[in-house]
Length: 171
Image (cartoon, rainbow, N blue to C red):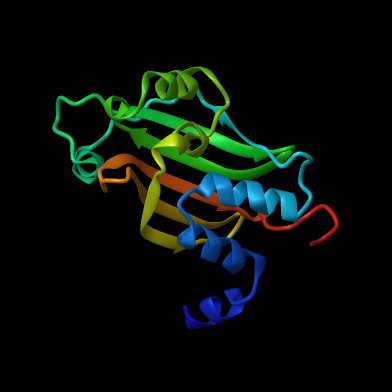
């Protein structure tokens, strides 16, 4: 494990991971990364939702969101893309009551990423875990997205593929 951690130092994977850990919004980090690596012009991240995906919130997710068994929790699974580049696969359980009607509508009907839709709430992230992975996925984050009072808005699991790390010219 130490060898893997040493190998990751100063790599694009470590750089992106460090930025995500320090950020309030993964979407903002991905848009900045996309622009720096010239993946698209303009560097806009869009969410391609799987409208057929259903995954009810289990007791662990509900506890993290601080909601009871009867509180509605919506599930959204998306692929975040910048241009033709896959940046992330994300699962998101969120509490619609804690968002505005406009935010809920955008999440249900558009390609707006969660972080973009809720930006007016000035959200913050609390990372719960980072998992380094072999193969096509470099690493995975689990996190809570919080409002300014520290109340959970969403529980997210985000997988970052190696394809998000290398630019078209190898940068």
